[in-house]
Image (cartoon, rainbow, N blue to C red; front, side):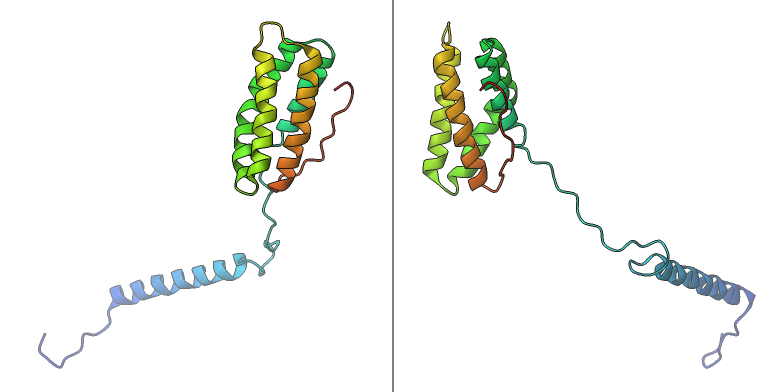
Length: 158
C-alpha cells in the first residue's frame, strides 16, 4: 500500500471490534453485579473464622489424667498424658518462655514431676495426683500468660 493511504475498515475488523466491545460490556456487567457491596449477591465482608487453638485439648486432657489417677487407673492417666498432653506442653513452655522464663521453667518442672512418677515401675497415685494437679494450675497460668486462656474447669475427682 502506498504511503499516505489509509486502509479501509472491512468486515473482519468490524466483527473483531464488536466482539471486543461485547466482551468488555459483559466484564463490566459482571463487575458491577458481583463486586462486594453491589448487586443482590453480596453479603458484605464476612468475619474470619477463628482458628482452633492448638492448646485447647491440653487442660481437658490433664483433667482426664487427674480423674484417671483418682479412680486408680494410672495406666489410663499415662495414656492420656502421652497422647494428648506431653507434646503440647513443650510448645506451651517455649511460648511462655518468650514472655516469662520463670513461668516456662515452672511448666517444665511440673511436667517433669509427672513424667518421673509415671516412669516408675509402680507409680504412686498419692504422689502422681497432686503432681498432675500442680501441672494443671501451672499450665493454666502459662496459657493465660501467652494469650490462650482456657475456661475449662476440671469436674469430678481430680
